[in-house]
Each structure stands twice: as C-alpha cells, then as structure tokens.
Image 1: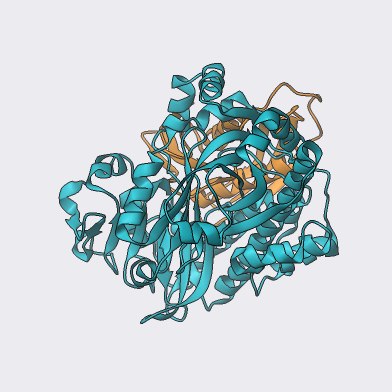
Image 2: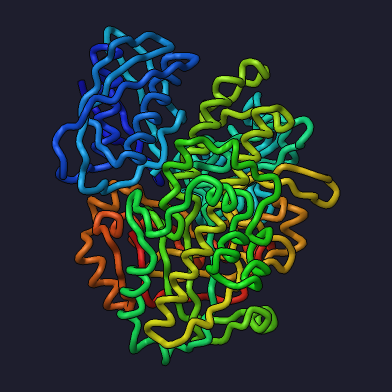
Length: 134
Length: 462
C-alpha cells in the first residue's frame, strides 16, 4: 500500500496503490484525512458510523464514498481513522467508520473530484489518482 | 500541447483550432502575452480548455483568461457559453465554491487616518469575521430562515439588519439570483453551511485593507469615489460548505444520468446534463440558491467589517463599490448570439462600464477595472479573476517559512492576521503570477480597462 502526493498547481493530487480494492478505498480515505491534517484529538474513538453507497462503476463508487465521508467529517467535525467494509462490489458498498473528534482540521478539502480518477487493477496492483479541491 | 499548437490571433490572443482534436466542437482561445505561454503550458490547463471545447452546445470558443491555471474539469480562468436549448450545464464549469467572488468596499477614511490604528483594525476584523477550515460563526440559520437566505441572498441579510438597502444597488444581480429553489438544496448541504454565514473559510479567501496607490482613469475613479491614498477593503470568499456540497450532490447526479442523455465527456469532472433537462434545471436552481448564500455571506462579512471600523475609527461609513461572482453560470443575452448560458469558473463578468474586481496576491497589488463592449464581442462579457497560481501548495510549503513570510510582509509595511501559518505560506506572493502582467493582457486586449491599482496594508485570513 502506498500513497503519494503529486504536484497540482491549485489543488492536491494523490496517487494511491494497494493490493486489493478494499485496501485502495481505505488508503484513499486515510490519504484524504492526511491532507486535511487532523490535529490531536479532543475525544477518543467514537461510535461506529454505518454508510451505504451505490454508484454506476467502481471509480464513481470510490469518489462518492470519499465525498460521503468528507461531508460527514465536515458536518460532525470528525476525523475518520478506520473503515470496515461489510460489502464492497464494483457498484455498491456497505461500511462502518470509526474515528475521533480533532481539535481542528489544518487544511480544507472542499470536495473529492472525479478528475483523473480511474480505479484500475494491473498485475494485482489496484491504483488510482485522485484530485482534491482545496 | 505546446506552443506550435497555438495560432497567434493578436498580441494577447492565441487560438487552438478545432482541428487540434477530433472531438472539439469549437476552437479554444487563450488570452495571454507571448511571455506567459511557457508558464501556462507548464501544467494541464490548456488541455483542460480543449476538453471544455467538446461540451455539447458550446458557442464560438472555449475561452481562458491570462490567470488560467490547472483545475479539474474546466481550468481555473475558463469561460464557456452554451446554447440553453441545445447545450448542457456542467457543475465542473462553475466549481465547488459556487459564487466565490470579490466585494470591494470604500471607506471615507484616508491612509493617514487608518495607518496609526492598522494593527488594531486588522485584529478587530479577525475577531469580527471568523475564519479557518470549516469554521462556523455566531450566526446560525436553519429551516425557513435559511430558505429565505437561499431564495433572496444579500437582500435577506439587509432585511435582517446587516446593511442598508442601498448596498444592494452595488452587487452583481442585486445580490440575488432569480429562480433559486431552496427545496433542491440537500440536508447535508444545509448542515454544512448553516453556521458558516459571515465567515471567510480558509485557502485563498481573505479580507484585505488596501490603499489606492495609482489611478489610471480619473473619470471612472470619480464615479466610484476613489482618490489616491484613499482606503478600500476587499472581501474574497464564497458559499462555504453549503456550496461545496451542492456541487458534490449534483455532480454525482449528473455522473449517473449522462448515459441516459447520450452524453460523453473526456473528463468525468465535466459531467453535465442538458440545460433544459430535469437534472439541468434542478442543478441551476440549486446553484442559484448557493450563489445567493454566498452573496448573503459577503453581506454579513461587510457588517462585521463595519463593526470593526466603528470600534477602531468611530466610523462605519463604508460603502460598497461592487460585488462580483467569479464561479457561476448565468443566462445572459449577448449581441449577435442571443441568449446563452455562460459558465465562468475563475472568471469575472465584465459588461460595459461594470466594475471588474481583480485581486492580486497578499504582497503585490490588486486592480479595479471596468468591462467593455470588446468583452461583449469577444469573451461573452468576461475578464480574468485574479493573478492565478503558478506554484503548487506543496512547493510553497517546502520553499517558504511562515515566520520569514510574516517578517518579509511586515518589512513591506503589510500587517498579517492569519490563523494558520501553513495556510499563509500557501498563499505567498511568489505562488502567484505577476498581477501587473495579467492586467496588462486584459487591458491590452480591451476586455477590461484599468481604473485604479491598490496596494495591501493589512491581510486577514484563516
């Protein structure tokens, strides 16, 4: 599993690689919160948050999943640190999130874009690029 | 894409012909000086402009301004006008920060009055106008009250006591876009935005106190009440989390509906729907509601600045010169073309004699220009929106230290009140293009002409 920030003039471009689709989704979520730089927590891990997402294909599913998590993070002022997938297919996922409440986020992520996103698997390595609107 | 793909139309205009790529429906036009081309071609902005030229219903040209830089979907600094009956509306042509824009205020105070209390003023504005990532304010608006804001924008803020009726005469569209439908704004969007009215946010958003340091057009400057060494204040922010969520919601909707409308785009972020379709009309009404939220936000911030001014200078006589949206889509009538839906993403409307507000970076300068007939003929009445980034945020953080930057700005006589050192360095002057060169292009092309130049005295940001 790797994630690496690549240059983008105005926003943030992240390249993620993983050994499975599930790991790719997890790594992308952790990468997003790394960009947001959650400061030290003011509360311990909180209760599980269950989410369900349906999308037309696996790339849209990843972007929609991240945007759903991002929206919850902004509304609940929470930083998610773990995700457990109860179901993950090409077009739907059911997952449970856990995390904590940070003192603040250092960096705003307005949205996860579909720009350049393409979930692919080559030689057993799952990868995509994601551009985050900052 | 390299220089050999560009055809020179004039000293400021370059064209990428339709033949460059088989899926282009119209040529693309770039406003830039020859000296800017290497820098502009360094990132993917011109390829993104070519992608815009493939949108169904696009008229005349896909256009980029000299502050263009890489975005997602559209480049930042991109303009596309589409036929409302045959064409599409694309949330990626507006951006996530719907109605991000600039408001320019004018104080009756002069440089000599303000200078002795500048630090106090900056601190006072920092207190009155909350800033920072996801930061909420004291004003929490929900339910029916939020619906009023979404429907009526700055007008509702004035009705609530945040400003005067005369303020509305100096805001694009009177601070209210018709056709907004609050019922099409999701609960998530409402929750993200309900406590963010009157707040700046983070990133490149700011309040800046400036002095007028140069006047180029005395007649127009008089019209706006500007004199040399007079004081103006700029506000740069938008629709905050509410707008971000509206864009996210409708991009997702359109991604799912494109196949049904038989639309294919070269970049998923250009997801779109026919303007007259249900999805197109719903997005337009929700986008208008978010745009109204942004107009109201800048009105509440203006009230905060007036309070700070009153506290430190015993004077709240601050007027609005103008307020422009630079991330929005609008139905407009254009000569020889008729009605078009103009997408402006990081581009400012520049109708004849309309004030065009173009902020530079925090250490350089900003400009007030006015729009022209030439802009109506060439750019669907549009001009640039700022200096435009040239350095990535990562590069800026690696190269510049917050302490060094604060000291450098202080040595230039510029006071900074910023919540985040990281956020500050990302917006350092060297991360942006030369604003004077950008303005020379739009002035030289005649699409927006120079009225006055402002130099920063104090910068307040998240």
